[in-house]
Image (cartoon, rainbow, N blue to C red; front, side, top):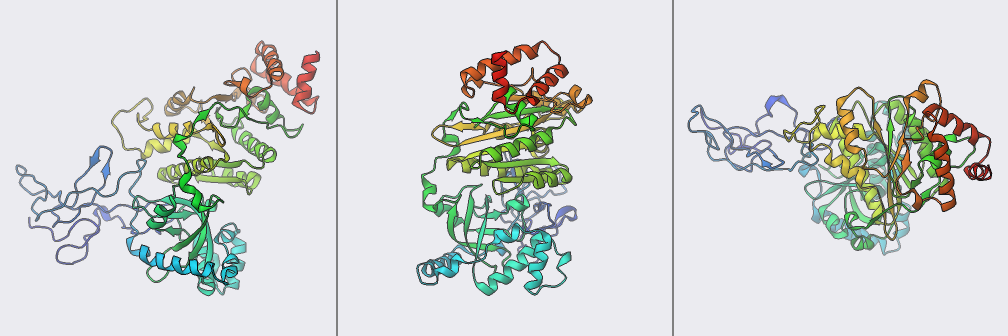
Amino acid sequence: MGPSQNGPAGGPGPSGGPAAPPQGGRPDFREEGGPQGQRPYPQQPYGGGGGGGGGGYPQQGGGYPGGGMGFGRRKKKRRKGGMGTGGGMGGGMPMHGGGHPGPRFDSFLPSDEELEREAAEIERVVKSADASAIKQAPSIGDLQRMELEELWTVASKEGFSEVQQIPKQDLIFKILKARATRQGLMVGEGCLEIMPDGFGFLRSPEQSYLHGPDDIYVSPTQVRRYGLRRGMIIKGLIRPPKENERYFALLRVQSINSRDPGKVHSLRNFEDLTPLHPEKRFVLEYSPEEIECRVIDLVTPIGKGQRMLIVAPPRTGKTVLMQKITKAINRNYKDVNIIVLLVDERPEEVTDFRRQCANEKVEVVASTFDEQSHRHVQVCEMVIEKAKRMVEFGDDVVILLDSITRMARAYNAEMPHSGKIMTGGLDSNALQRPKKFFGAARAIENGGSLTIIGTALVDTGSKMDEVIFEEFKGTGNAELHLDRKLVEKRIWPAIDVAASGTRREELLLDPKELELVYRLRKVLSDMNVVEALELLKNRLKKVKTNAEFLMTMALG
């Protein structure tokens, strides 16, 4: 068996010939612009390589050597390099969250020196009399927020024809490139995702942070200069891609999370901030007809920084309840940023949530059940990192997660298997990242809070779901239980009053209000689930506010 003429996967052999095709006939996507929703495959190492850096990628506990792991015919003397001439040690890209290694971008990105020269030219223009033209530059976000029919109209005005067959992100890219070529510069904005190689991309929230041709490249120099972190919202001047380039490039950072870029270095890391018990309350009541919100205020008060678990059997109205909580917080607290995260959800539920709740302060991010598990993981990681950056700036953030169970399933599918399998096929390490996500909820000393309201599925018939719920039970500081018996009698909201409650609710409620709530619980505890909720609903319908209801209790 002669030596192989090809080097490591993805590179030419010593003779300068083309690289060998990937094993198994897999396509080699060398950029992020592969099929939408599909993660590129890494190149595979080949046996008997003729030297080089090696392919492969390390997993937890080390990596496989690549490039030179060939095997000869003789079994006794099996060596690295096999029958080849040398061979390098493997390594390559580390695993992040158990997913696949990232794609390769090297031939499609501008150099740091080129971007630095263009950025210096922009700085001279900004300080000159032409600065007004830059302020009036069109924004990429305006196009991303448009509906498809509006984009067709814009594209026809730009001179494009037969645009109905073009995907939305590709159409935005064409319009942007045409405008930027004509006008020179544009304003771009997005949420930063940093790659393992040090550079990053600005992803669009309108596309739920899915990679696409309208992403904006951020160079490693800019990441280091401004101290950028994953999840920051970057706004700045961008230029169109040149020959051999595939992405728009960021030239000048104008703002980071709507603040001055110079203040980022002074921010403390989220992990270094001091967590406290929730002391400031979210009052959900805003209308006499919204009985669901009024019941939650009495039974399970929610504070800023709450870690709340909604325990729900199937078809008990948890999605409708999440929508009502979203509307209530958005209506009563205009300065609070709300992110609705739908993981492994039905597409029609995503559309309904966006039409019911989405606005300037409410962002709906979704990954539907027909997408791969690494996509679910990427969405969850982007959302929690974005929320952490907001809290570092002192903002109040609320994440409504539907559901923790499906998120844990996705992490279980993507994590490298440790060999320790729990009941139901759950890996022992799979819940580490979901717990870190849920555990990020906290009230911060001297400003800022992250509130997470997540749903946990029970009574699904899946042993894995039971294990996930048992692992998360007790990790939250508030629990809202929904009951199937109430749904069978068509009583909504299907809230089990006796089983629901908030830890340290005395920090959220006035002493007099707390005393009356205790008295209410004593009365309802002697009844079954159906009778208790029916009595509470009937009494609430007779008065317009919860305060009136509690006062009638005090007088009675």
